Length: 501
Image (cartoon, rainbow, N blue to C red; front, side, top):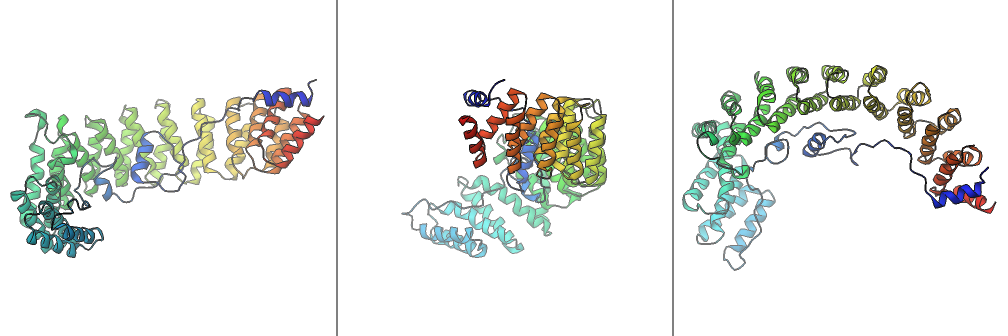
């Protein structure tokens, strides 16, 4: 029989392999995450413990992954760059007013700069910042003045550094005025947005506006956000009917704007785009925005994608979208998909995971029942993890019972044991008692690892007991190794006793 001293020596010389541990999902360290980050993580397949619903949709219309990549316009004036210029001090004062949100005062200061120093290096861009300050007041008279200022800059300072921003700002100013009933502004928005439909790119020449940040067509579409649905939707529909490569960025933007227009057609337009657009990203964004519409009709549309689409990526996005809709019907659709034998396995795994994140107690019972009907071990493992994430006494007891069930496969029992052992709601007494009932050596090794992850003194006591009395020399070596990782004085005392034998 090998002595404890020999076991201890061997443990220090050759560190035993760490038992098989299920791969933990990436869980954010804080309870909230930005909408953009949440969507990118979900698209990348990262499983979040809780994914917040996206409430602030308006900010997704500019930069970020959910809306098309477009430039709204510059909103922060740069620091002064010409200290020797006589207008430098006025520019700095105006900039400070702007950055502190004193828009009326800032507009006056920039106008004063223009009047006093027409030849200044600051003057060409001061027109833009004056117009921007006026725009931020949202007052009808100020908006009209902003339009006039931008017209002047266009006609007299075409080379100004801010001209690209000015085009986008001008479209937004016109959109805001159109919303307030300005007939000329409404005509501008309609005509410029209609031009988007007629700019065929590859069909009639090379693509224009290759960089979406500087594409005036995007600015025209942005202005449609300010228009009523009756005038905006027909234009957007024509944009979404395009199929040329040059219109991809426009279609992405149109998808977002359609999602913000609450009309009887909204869901049907998004569904048609999700099914038929030739660009994968446009299709995926249409699916995502269906989830944010959140209506019963949108839910049915997402279910139709799961039923009829043969594209696994699109089904994946539809599963995610349904998980974001807080309704019993959406939950039922996820459950139905999880059981669909002919569906892609990886997408079924996602459906199982998202069911555990919905906060519906009924889903826990469903998942436990689903486990018994599954034959695929990967799907079963996903159920074990998902049930562990829901928590609660019933679910933890189920995991412990499964770990002790000799009719189950060893690997699944090991996973159940691991996830149950991660919860403080499973008593150490119950975990300690399970070790002596286990007959499989791999399970016993997993049990030793579970003890090593617990902070209770009783867990260390159990490891010491195994090191003293376990007949299997390798298991005793594993126990000694994990005792050596403990900072508890009892661990050092035990190891000293062994060495002294």
